[in-house]
Image (cartoon, rainbow, N blue to C red; front, side):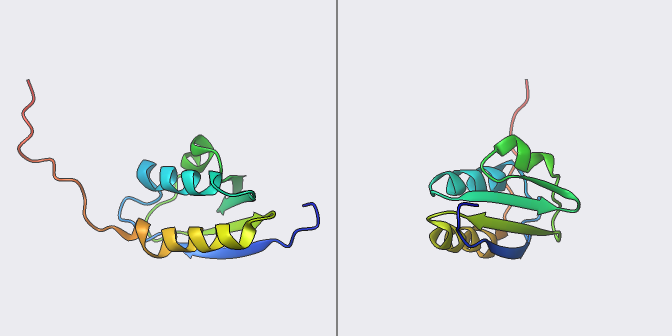
Amino acid sequence: MNGYKVIADRFSVTNPMGLDLRCAHMLVQTALQFDAEFEVKYRRAAVDGKSLLNVLSLGVDCGSVVDVNIYGREAPQAHEAIQFLFNHAFASDVLPETSGIAVA
């Protein structure tokens, strides 16, 4: 871990769709902005938080708790950004409207 302190935190997933494609994409895109390593843990699996497929493979449902470990030069800034996502950006309870779409 190159002498950097690990920042460990636990987050509840409040998005009704769980850690779906939208949320996973936001998480990965945020993680990629920082010079830090991300590990996302759910149940007994731990994956690289900078990989969309790995994050999606966890299958995190609404109401679940995930553990996130961050370490590296920009870990404090990365932690702050990840906190914002889980506490605000993922919490959307508005689902896309699908009525009125014509199917040929």
